[in-house]
Structures are given as structure tokens and as C-alpha cells.
Length: 91
Image (cartoon, rainbow, N blue to C red; front, side, top):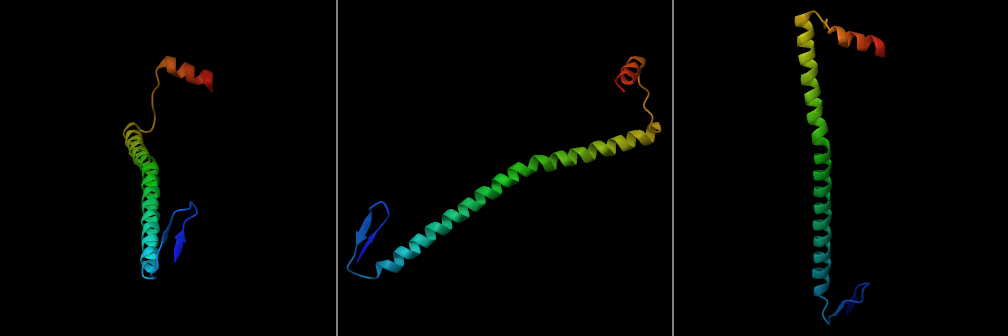
């Protein structure tokens, strides 16, 4: 029995017993590669999403600090005269 790949590589055997072993090895390699690919994709997605999650937590902290500041000062911020003039000119 002869087995050849698309690149011309092959084996010759007069016995049938290597066929299940070859098939099982091929399936094992495919499973390993697909699992490896899935792990790489998951790692990439996690690395992509982690900074945005951390930024969201920082935004929540900033909003809490702003609420605390507004409750302590009554919500009003007194701007210096120069900044007030710039703000009026821009709006």
C-alpha cells in the first residue's frame, strides 16, 4: 500500500496496521494545532481588551472624585478672571 502527500512525499507499506496509526497521528497533530490557535486568539483578545477595562475603571474613579468634589464645593468652580474671559470668548 502506498501513501503520498500533495508534495510527493510518501511511504510504502505491505501491512495495513500503520494506517490507523497514521490517521490517529494526523488527527492528534490537527487537534494540537487547532488548540494552539484557539489559545493564541484568546490571548490576543484578552490583551486587546484589558487596557480598555482598566481605562473604564479609571473613568469610574475619576467620576467618583468629581462627584465628591462637587458635593464638597456645592458644584460650583470659581475660575480665575483670565480663564473666565477665555471661556467666554470660546463660547
